[in-house]
Image (cartoon, rainbow, N blue to C red):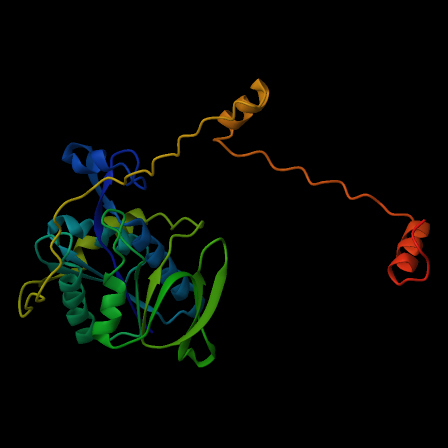
Length: 287
């Protein structure tokens, strides 16, 4: 079985590699460092688990970018990848996801594959477009947000568990070849082996990532980055007729109105019910 894993380096905040919601820190280059995309590490872990379960699995790690992208291949080799491909090309900026997908599709289709694994999204840009676009260019099915992958009997299809929110899982069957994007899971990826990591340079195959590839027409051009605008809270004035304690409760609860007390239902005795029935149907007259 030929498994291709796509890996990349991402820009993360120093000291907080998975906290990318601090926009001001991300815009300052001094606060940033390069690290292997955490979602791609989860994809490498899934590939290695398939190899350990089924044996005859050949893992090829592919990355595209400048020389700094090679570190992702070293980590992939340390985690068990058998073959390393580096598509030497200047770094892709935001809005060039389709161009990156075309470059990867050209390489993957040229070598043949049964399964392509990649991270659900990147830690920095996080569009999540490359994996799905790659499947479209290759003409194969795509399964997103995978948390567990297994081969069906006969190995002609996959059994994939997908994360669908609020802890729920959806189990789907998908024919091979296919592209699967992997979600981060609670199980941490294995630590790269030191010996394999240090000797990974001898395994890297460098290819020109600029030859024979035409840019995608009408690319998405990033214009600016804006902060999220919080919704203004509704200003309220507590009712003056309420007591001081009730007004304080409304202020501390964010202005939530007090729940209206339900009126207690009066219980009617059996004799009274019988009297009302006879009176209603004219059997007796009201005294």
